[in-house]
Length: 221
Image 1: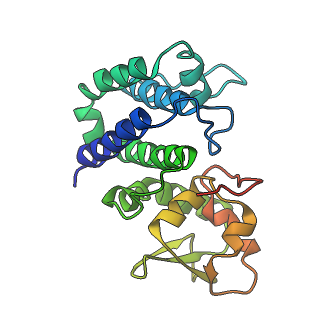
Image 2 (image 1 turned 90 degrees about the horizontal axis):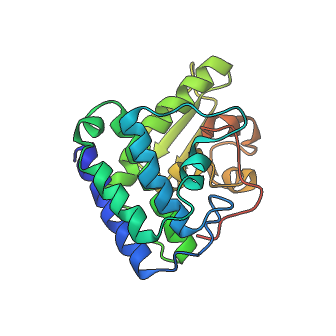
């Protein structure tokens, strides 16, 4: 499937979820946001990608800005804005940025599912596709940091090494769990409790975070 198809499949599911759910539900994966805020962020974020509006003021945050600028939007307004931006995004989705957008929309789909108590779509092709760019990023960071390499066995078959050199540990994990881990939706204890080949995985945890952070409290999902 193309990035556009993967993005659209996730967007269709998100639209159905928000229309059937509570727009005021808190999104634990994105502290301070409601379900409606998450939709506003997806709409605004795509718009900013289209216009290359990535700069933020010192102390500000890209995601928070997209939400703040749309505090007065209704859910339907946010969905309409998202649809407008998507109508002109084919070229963007076909570019190298397409993988970033797939990772974004799929990750936030599962943030929304958790907020609304509607788990599902964990085996969709988009979940595995959403790992492509994050895995490239954590591999780059691990190589720059010089930490020991980690072998990933994803869904019992796919292998990838994060970092340079001979892997010092192996992690067997589902694509869904790996995506949630890399995107900062898991605590250190949760990651240590995964299926590692070593008794203590603590030295290898930095290899599995794109943003350098883990949650303080577990997500119930």
